[in-house]
Length: 245
Image 1 (cartoon, rainbow, N blue to C red):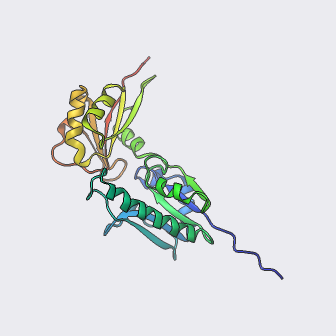
Image 2: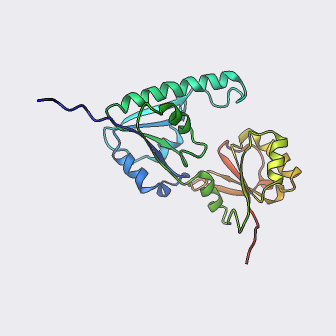
Image 3: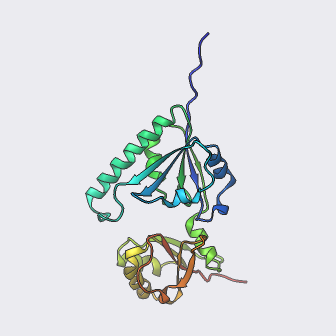
């Protein structure tokens, strides 16, 4: 009697949504409930936001794989060493996940939506042809933030621009000037530069800053009222005015 080979598993990336566990999709929740292996990104020494979001959801006996970033903001993004270190990190974890997926499923947790500036994209490209993958979309963080602001981000034929505060001041100013509605991500130490760009584009007075959108510690404030530092994962919004009946 010939024994059949163990069926291969797959890498399942579960989008967790913007932060409120109740905004997670049923499909992601089911994948987490059935998981035997769960992987998630985190800073060294931290629990990690993605792991925190699934507290109380993981099944008993699950094997956890904490993918700890070797570098975050210690080295400038433009430094070739930054890219080299991160590339090695993603290479290593892609190989690890592919090995697990030879025999079992492994669920990778991803805040927001995996294909919207998610770190999983770097694993996704490396796993092509090496492991079967399933991507479960999630509500984006920016969607949670503009809902928290209490006003529609776009109306009618408004054009929405999503920009990173890591761009140069001139580039930010140009993008802000040319759009109707605006989302700016990755704030942190880039806030002074972003303020200047918004002021140059004559939109500083219209800007809102949302921290930890949809979470218990959420704050929504006019950007002009903010003093001091803000978290890297804050979002700045400028609402469109568009055509209204």
